[in-house]
Image (cartoon, rainbow, N blue to C red; front, side, top):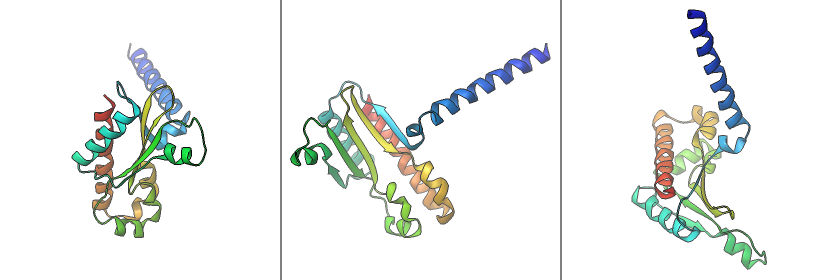
Amino acid sequence: MRALVAFLIGAIIALSLFYFIRYYFGNPFRLMFYTVEVKNKNFDQTLEELQKKLNENGLKVIRVLPISKALEARGVKDFMKYSIILACDIPNKEKLLVKAPSLTNLIPCSVAVYDDGKGVKVSAPKEIVFLAEEAKKLTEEEIKLLIDTYRTLRKTIDEVRR
């Protein structure tokens, strides 16, 4: 009986590990980005609400880059609606960037909002991927600041997706 229980537990763990690896490593995009589909809102509503929520949650919006409008002005036709919100104007960002210049991928937070024809999506990078390499250059407080900032960012994105 013990052998059977041990076998079943082992099989469940192996199967779970297999699906975890397949889910993340089968699509590297999932490793690098937190992406959600927005329910019951169009592109403009999502963009407006996300900016409002970012500011309300202390992740000050610095600038909005209307990518689709810029491409349209250059003659590109029928490009999907696409904007990037630069936010998370964190304190002492200059010191962090001097210590670890590659963190420009995280600071400011770059949040993409786009309508791919199947629905509106919101996507932001995952900080852990960048911190895995740069953590040795930062203090524990700086790492915690970045992790907390991105945790708040994902929470904000989740608020808007509903």
